[in-house]
Structure formats: structure tokens, C-alpha cells
Image 1 (cartoon, rainbow, N blue to C red):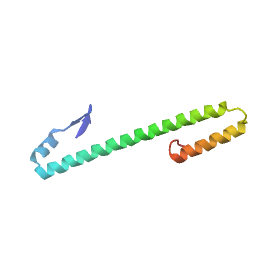
Image 2: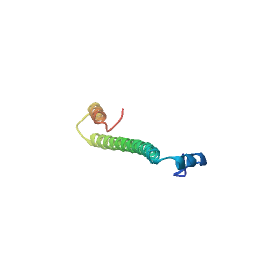
Image 3: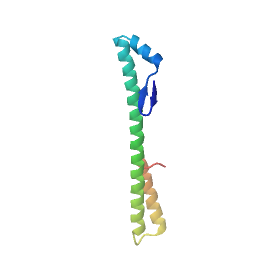
Image 4: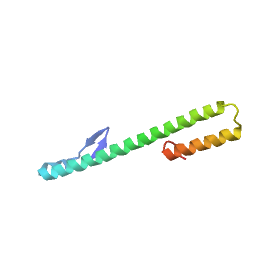
Amino acid sequence: MQLRQGKIRINRKEMREIKRMDHAQMEQRLTEAMCLGYAAGKAERDREIACAAEETGRRWQSAVQKTVKALKGIGEKRKELLMEYVKIELEKEGICRK
């Protein structure tokens, strides 16, 4: 089986094999195909979730950085130290990567 243009294509050899299958063999083949598709879809979804979490972490970090820079009465060293603590906490939560 090949995936072309978003559709599964079956060649003649595979078609002959499918025609000769009994019920149990066909059930097993379809189950394997479904499991492969499910695993591929799950992996894609997990990648999308990880990307979304990373983007959220960047937004949080950016928002906190702007807020900290706007604070008055705190020196630059303290602001840098505060940003490091925020970054460490975001990494612990899995929102932002190192």
C-alpha cells in the first residue's frame, strides 16, 4: 500500500492477496492498518501539542519580561535574576524548553 495524494493506493499484487483472504486475515490486515494510522495521528497530535506549549511558554516569557522591564525601583541585575527564576519555573512546568 502506498499513500498518494492523501489516498491509499493498492497495487495489483496486493489486490489479489486481499481477494484471497478469509475473514480473519482481512480483519487482521485492517486492524494493522488502523493501528498504524492511529499511531501516526497520535504522534502528529503530540507534536502539535508540544509546539503549542512551547509557543505559550514563549508568550509567557515575553509578557513577564515586558512587565519586569516596566517595573520601577528595581535594578537591572534584579530584573535579570527575576527573569532567570521565571525561565527556570517555566522549564520545570514543561511550558518552555531550555
